[in-house]
Length: 403
Image (tube, rainbow, N blue to C red):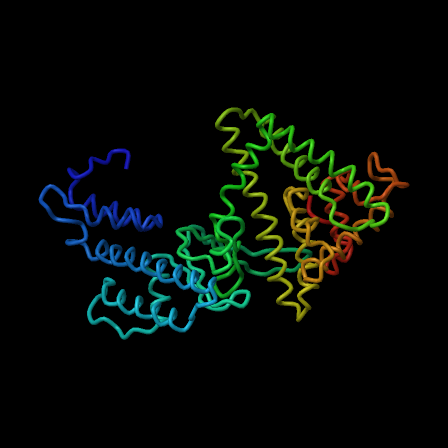
């Protein structure tokens, strides 16, 4: 692209760029270039079968998104007909099928064959089914596909992590939430699937909150107010969601990361880029490979209740996190103590951590053993957090957590 000369580029270079854009999941841009005439009036789509099928696929995606959004709109109005929508999806697939670049006779069409072909040709991941009581579609395109063997406390399991961008649909609920929240991913036959757009903006927002003086001031004021309220509440409810704890742990972890990068000699744009990358990597390591990896390990050990599975995975999410303070958001959260499997698991963990703090009070710098303990959780070092969480884990068996 830096040397791109537009319409004056030779036909083979134009076709190569069409393919490269599609391989980068920029299907609209690829299709637009494939339909752009060159100096001789010919388009890449006219002379290259791959370019032609990219054009067809871009059109299919646009029509699929249109049909699905309309189905979601009608569903929100209690007029949705998921069977009619599924028939429309099948018809769109049938129309695309013969326009793909086949060698020889076009094979017979089946929905499952289309899913396999668009995965192979375009990196598409399609999940059609029911989510939270609604028939819907989750569909995007692989931009990361990483396989790793996760090892925890002497147990191992293979994990596949797939990150999706070029999202066509992220389910009915994400559509209805309209940017206020979204499905973050799922675990299924494709492995651990992350919907990337919901995550990429967070490191940029964190950088702003950490480095903008006014944002820092507002954050500190909020934490101070929450701390006073939490200290009072903890006198009667020793284990609950205390926003000040989450806020302080998060702020301190982010600042420690920033300080470590500055100590390494980074500044300016290089510091900002390194911070955002390191923050994203740390969250991915804990939430994906530690948490979901534990689910994969437990799947080899037997059958457990949903609460027990979350309890174990959340313990690993902190004990094996590169930065444990950043891994606490999903545990010290507003759902702590509710009747969902996640909420019950969170409460069990925090009760166990409080007991560990009681037993190791003399080791925790600055701890006031006469005051409620959970609001003092930020006083634990990273190593103490790992030890506390590992002490609750039925697999740990006295094995020390990683450094």
